[in-house]
Image 1 (cartoon, rainbow, N blue to C red):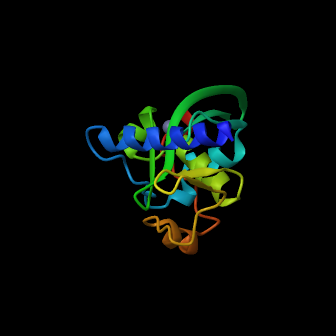
Image 2 (image 1 turned 90 degrees about the vertical axis):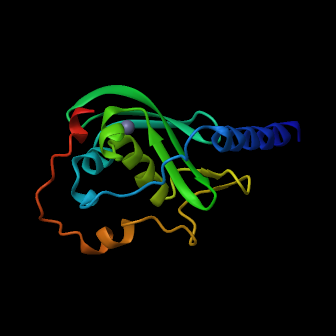
Length: 158
Ligand SMILES: [Zn+2]
């Protein structure tokens, strides 16, 4: 019971933290051709470990397809005001708004392998809820051509 109470307080605290900061958190947007991006390929193929750092953020350890060394990044990935907000500290995310770390979290979540917190409702979702619409996610999923060459978006170098 005490654990449940403190978890609730923690969700609320993280929601407050996001609400009070300067600037809105980024809504996750999928770049054109994201299913062919090297970030997406790497997210699925490279060794990785993901752990919840707090209700709003994950610690993502991600290696490379041909290298087991894991680099750690703290990634915001949560539901906030009905949107999926995502932010990563890496250069790839800063310059493109998309990186292998965010891609990995989306991949895990869409396979029901991640618990993402709805900061407003104080509950977690083990897969993207039906009401969540993420720009471009569906369009690219439908239009993906499996034999299209992998686009070099720098995902392998982050
Ligand atoms: Zn990143």
